[in-house]
Image (cartoon, rainbow, N blue to C red; front, side, top):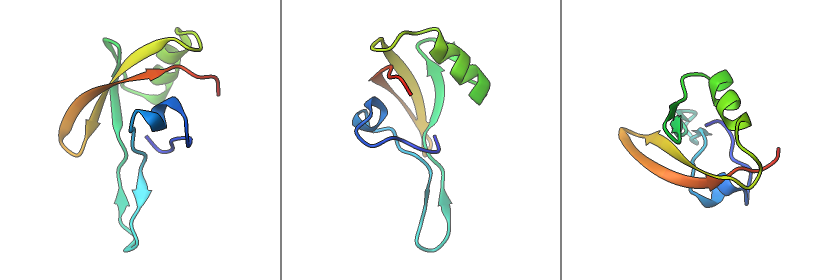
Length: 79
């Protein structure tokens, strides 16, 4: 994840974007591995899967962060 819009469903779910530390080191953001049970291997695949849902649908994302995996629920929003 490179960016999370403030006050979005992703922000409220605690999804963390990549960030730059004061010392110049890039800290990777969360990696979305699945939407529901569908594997996300590329940005194109992520967009294709997300496009199969409607605005206000609730989906479960599988997230990998700093060596740990967990799931969060988010509401699909318009761009």
